[in-house]
Length: 295
Length: 313
Image 1 (cartoon, one colour):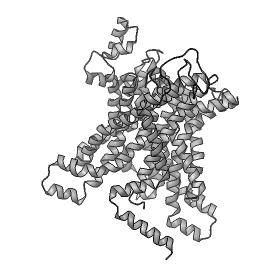
Image 2 (tube, each protein chain N blue to C red):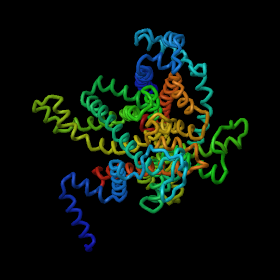
Image 3 (cartoon, each protein chain N blue to C red):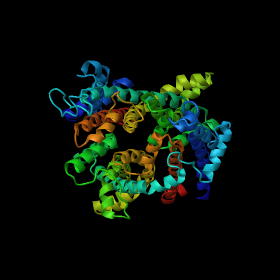
Image 4 (cartoon, rainbow over the protein chains, first blue to last red):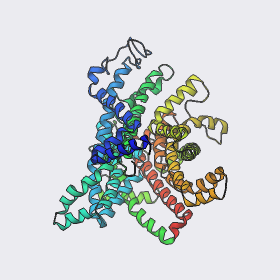
C-alpha cells in the first residue's frame, strides 16, 4: 500500500466522521466551480447591499454634457444616451436583479411547497386535481406565462416578481410532491403515524424536513432562471420602469445605440451573464455535494 | 397502444380544461373594470359599452367563461381591438415566420448539442469533456437577447456581413432569407443546444456502459461503429423525446429573439399586443402555445412508446 493510498484512506475516514451538514459543506468546498460561483455571488450581494457607497454617481442623474461618452477615467464604463454613468447603473441594477431573483423564488416556494406537500401527502383525488392544475401551468411556456401575467397585472418590478414567482411555482409543486411520495412510505413516518401524531404535525415535523434539500438545490438554480426572466421582462418593458436602473431595461435602451455607444450594451449583459453563471455553478455544485452517490 | 392512448388522453382533457380556466382567469387580474382597461387611454363611453357587450362583461363569471370557451371551441379566439382582425387569423399569419426561425434553431441546436454530447461522453473526464461542459454552462447562462445584441454588434455593425434586423420570406429570396435568419436562429438555438448536450451526454454515458455495447466491443467492432451504431442510436431515443419538451423554451426564446432582430413573428405579436392592451391576442397566443405544447408532449409520449419495446410489454 503506497503512502498516497494511505493518505487518501485517512482523508476518507475523516470525511466519514463528519456530520451530514459538515460533509456536504466539505464536498461543496472541494468543487472549484461551486466555490468560484459562491465567491462571485458574494461580490454581487455585497455590491447590491452597498450600492449607495460603491456607485461613483447617482444612477438616475442625467448630464447633458456627457451624453454617450465612451469609457474614460471619469466614467469607467462610459455614459448612456442621457449622460447617466453606466457603472453606477450596473451597480444599482444588481439590487433589482438579485431582489427579483430571490423574491420570485420565495413566492414560488411559498406557494409551491405547501401545495406539493398536500398533493403528495394526501394523494387520491386531491393529488389528481392539484396535479392537473400544475400540468396546465407547466403547459404554458415559462416566459410567455410571465409576460401574460405581467401584462394583465401592469408593468412594474413588483408585478414582474409576482409573475415570475407564479410561473416558477409548478416546478416546486412537482418536485415537492415527488419527494413527499418517496418519503411518506418510510418507516419513521409510519412510526409517527402509529404514535398517533396528527396529519399536520407529521407533514410539517417529519415529512417537510426530509424533502427540503433537493428543493433548496432547485431553488438556487431557479434564482438563475428568475434573474434571466426579470431581465427579459425589463428588456421588453414589463419589469423595472425607467428611470430606475435594471440590467434588462439598460439593454432595451442600449440596442438602439449599437452604432454610437456599444459600451451601453456590453456591461449590463456581462453582469447578467456573470450573476446567472455563478448561481448555476453554485447550484450544480450543491446538487453534486448533496448527491449520496458522490464521494 | 389503444389503452395507452386512452390513458394519456384522459389526463390531457382535464389539463386542457385547467389551461382554459387559467387563460380566462388572466382577464380577472386587470385592475378595476376590464372594459375600462381594454379601452385604453381614450375611455370613449361607446367603446367601453361595446367592449362590455362584446366580451359579455356584464354577465356573471361562469357564464362569461362558457361563452368564451364555446367560441374557442368553434375556432373563435376573439378579435384584436387594435388591428380589427380575428386573433386566429393573426396567429396563422405570424406562425410561418416563427416556424422558420424555430426549425432553423432546432437544426442548429441538434447539430451542436448532439455532437458536443457525444464528444463529451466518449472522452469523459478529458479536457474535451470539460470544454464541452463549460460551453454548455455558457449557453445556459447567456441571456439570448444579450447574445443577439452582441452578435449584431460584431457581424452587422463591425463586420457588416449580416443584416441586423428584418425578415425576408424564403419563397421570395431564399439566400437573403437565410442571411437574415441565421443569426437569430443561432441565438435561439444556443441555449437549447446546451440542454441537448447535457441530455445526450448523460444518455450516451448510460448506453456506453450497457452490456450490449460491451458485447459489440468484444466482437471487435471499431470504436466509431460502436459509438455511432450501437451507442448513439439508443441514446437518441430519450434525447429526441426530451427535445420535444424544449418547445416551451423555444417559444419563450422566440419572443425575445424576434424583439431583438425585429422579426414579425409570433413572439413580436404577443409583445405588441401587450403594449397595445390587446388582451384577446395575449390570451389567444397563450392558449395556442399551451395547447400545442400539450399535443407535442402527447406526440413525444407516443413516439417513446413506439420506439421503446419495453413500454409495449
